[in-house]
Length: 171
Image (cartoon, rainbow, N blue to C red; front, side, top):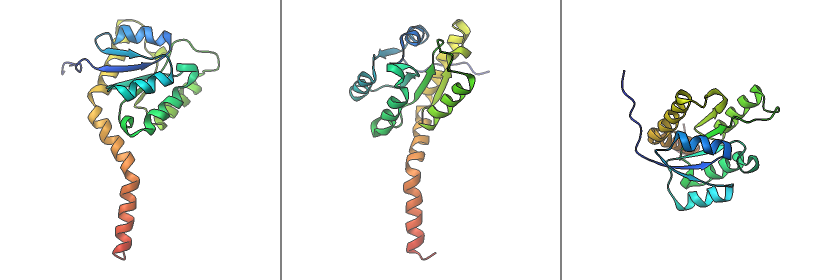
């Protein structure tokens, strides 16, 4: 079995609610964490600094996670940064297992790189180590994620290029 080698200390943008922030501060203590209070601060931080990953919580800034995720992905500079969305431990009765599954599909449709329901990760040594490894993994495979994102974004151009080439050759 190959040993686990975590990535270098990385800058991570935390756009999360206070309950999630406290836990991620403990779990990711070896990284440089930049916490923001609202979506405006998050976008301002992204304009000024380079981050290895962005972590967003579902209820961040009065449930603005989807809006912020869309804003991040709509800018060329942020298109390829890994984004992990999380649902905190505290949830209302309206958030059923079906709703959580819907959140998972929705964040991935908006091109987030992952979704964690923290209820599946106990706040203990093992659960927190699993979260840290997931974040580290997203940081480590950044190049592969960028390649995937580029392929997604360039696919329409490539199809159009092939169509024009076919039309030009009369095939």
